[in-house]
Image 1 (cartoon, rainbow, N blue to C red):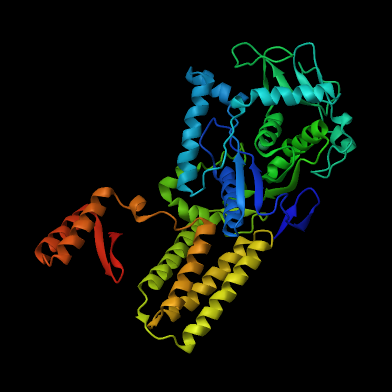
Image 2: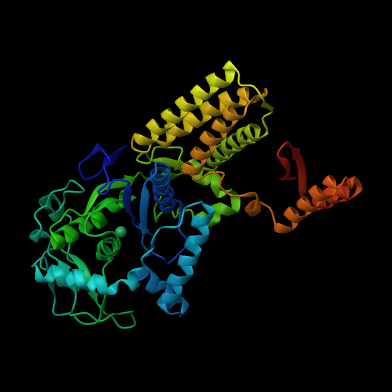
Length: 463
Ligand SMILES: [Zn+2]
């Protein structure tokens, strides 16, 4: 598989540190609010990459942090007159609700900054001891950017060019405008932890270095996030991690492109940060996920209602094909048409992998899935061999699983009451009690569900 590495600015063959195992770290949310569609893109994209690695037989350790102490969290807690930890706990729960609805698999580990203060303090101390960081009399600790000559290598900027834009804010005791905070001295009313420099709390950048290294080790395979994190967040992560360990930090850096809303950049001034929670009131998040994957991850995408509606219609077409495959009449004999179709499915599978292996080109892979569906729709209109039908189902299911679409089960789609009535009706029919079966059909209709009788059993459908 080839992946575009931001560090080297080219597509490189991905070779994991340990064969058959992949370690990934994705910068997670700062938990002070629901997450917006711009946050959702990296979550969905890198979940898809993880699913693809797993489908190829790799064991993936997927780490995504929660930043649960931060200015915005503290501000919200003060406004609501609750402890800052309540805000974090609440929005971690809300994160899971939206992420589950987007079929984002749970991470192997979700480290929280407040649970890794010890590691963070130890890493800062290591940098101070090595002369890469310094404490001010006020108890702040800064990373000395000029002590690390490779600074700027990830974002491709020179220290000189960065110098001109750097400022020292009033109250900051930095030696150099480029230096950034590793540890912040406690201010009154803020959460704080003990450290060799007095009570304080971690800066944002150091959290990700400490947590990724705590779970994945000093060198790991892939670090990913949105393009907006390349500078300064990831640049600073590289600098402080490699300065501390003297080893390469992440081996591949992956960044997804921006998302525009109705052709406009998401910005504070336009106040167009669409929350996933609000979008979910209007659209099935399956369609939103499919829409987010409709472009290769490094390209920008434009979010509009019309495009999500199109994605939703495309999903319905996919679902119809899958149902046709499931209901295909079976023939006892294997014909030439079956053999030709089996060969075609193998070719679709190769093309699908080729697209995914080319820097996770989900746009092309989705194209392959639709080509397959056109062929399958025609194919299953006549009785076909069991092996050909099964191969079609396997190809489809693997693609749908990797994309994380159409994964929600009937149990999740329909209330237990309706499913129980459906089951009762099936029983009545096997007992040839058709009057009772009709009664149950009518009862379901009043609840808003129709019954579709199919070869593989009856199914519910929303009226
Ligand atoms: Zn991070």
